[in-house]
View (cartoon, helix red, strand yellow):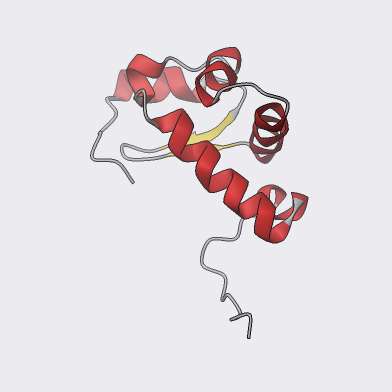
Length: 99
């Protein structure tokens, strides 16, 4: 999680984006469909920045490093859990060790 804190105006702007579920001062929750589409677009050759700009995000608000970091995380989840890894909320779930 970044050290960037969103103002109430920035939070309202971000929440008006159709690819966002919720925004807090510290974090953005993206729609699962956007995550899946982003990973697929990345595989097709789009850059993380292109994906987020086409998704309607203002990188001056979210930070220029956010697209790359999100795509890295989503690609890792997609590689481990497949499509379901992006469509389901896995936070707080007990993860089994792969032995």
